[in-house]
Amino acid sequence: MIPYYLAIPFIYLLSYLPFWALYGISDFLCFLLFHVVGYRRKVVEQNLRNSFPQKSEKEIKTLSKKYYHYLCDLTLEVFKKITMNRPAAMNRCKFHNAELINRLASENKSVILLMGHYGNWEWAGSSFTLSTNHQLHVIYKALSNPYFEKLMVKSRTLFGTRLIKVENTLRDIIANKNNPAAYAFIADQTPFPQQAYWTTFLNQDTPLFTGAEKLAKKLNYPVVFVNIVRVKRGYYEIFPELLFEEPKLCKENEITEAFIRRLETEIIKMPETWLWSHRRWKYTKEQAVNK
Image (cartoon, rainbow, N blue to C red):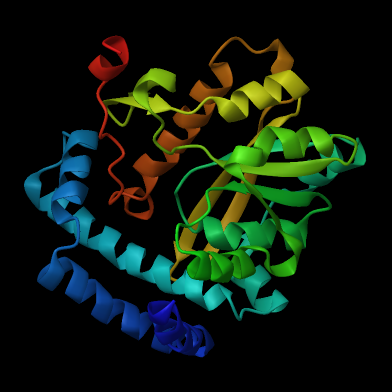
């Protein structure tokens, strides 16, 4: 409780700063994290080496530094969102192809949104809510600290986005099946190896959650990939793409595979805007086989 009450005035101060000042602070934080603290540098650089074996060590170091600039920007942008108004939210994170989502809404179809830890997924929620006719529900895992959890819920529900705790996903979706909506899953997280679908992602054996696919097939909700492109510092653009309109016709793991291939394509285009400091490959395929 004490750390929260000490931190909250500082967080709100950051949130009210103009963007030029915020990014000045971000540059300083990047210097500290990259050169002084070395926060997870070994994890980041090893993930990059494994994912891009064709790159030289110099290229890996350059890409690593770009990633830390992005990570610091992203962190402060999350704080900035707390006090962003509607015009700023829509201008800073533009939503394209809203007609796709609105068509599905007009047909009374709920939709499954699949996205990765790429670009600014926190701003993307607000952009979706402000730009489309579908009620957005974001599937999330609650923070262990109840005070910071309250702050993040406030930020994430800005402009009307609704949150569903991951453990309540199926129950909540079934209860609201008569009210067409959009359900967003950040689907590149790490499941236990025995419960995962395994594929090759960024040149590595990778386990993936299949829960979103199972829900889509069970309920026959169209599946949309949400691409979040960082255009320049502080500006993003959102591009929804229909992957499957009739998921019940898909083969097993077809949806999950299609999602991860699209995400991989985007990461290769702009690798610095994916979450490399996450220990994504902490499990091996042998752990699934030898369960």
